[in-house]
Length: 192
Image (cartoon, rainbow, N blue to C red; front, side, top):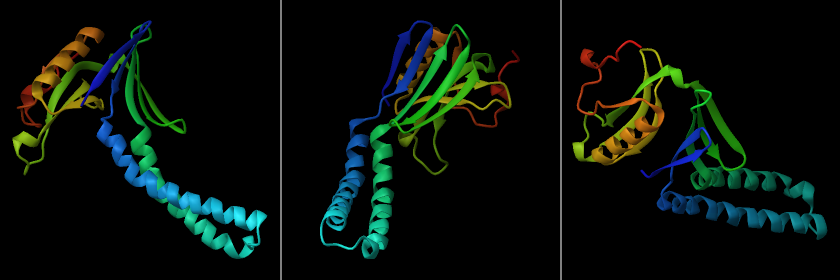
């Protein structure tokens, strides 16, 4: 997955760039939703300015509105979803943001001091082939600290290069845990 670093003063932003295919998939949802919305507008115009009866048409109007929203919401999310992490070196704050267009922003604040390194782990189910694995790059801390996923890659070399670049920028060591077992006692992070 493509990522981008941007710098503004003491703040560094790491952003996932959504592929064009993901935005194109949103058309599958947005198209029918807009089609239904078109008929809602026609019905409302007829009821308000024509010879229709709004009282009789209201249940159908509400059902069609609910259907348009149910079909359109996934398309809106796919078309406008952004995920980025702002790392402020001056204050030591990490801000994780999931943004869905101008309507919804989910923000989580963490301290940079919670994290002791950058890990590369293989995201692979037990019954999956190794060729279908993803390599996740995470900020991790000591035991009990929830890691923050920064990016995911299909290629291990890309994941390692990205983790090294990120580590250079924020002063953390990048470690590749892709071929270790999750419960391996040797991968416990060192004490801070």
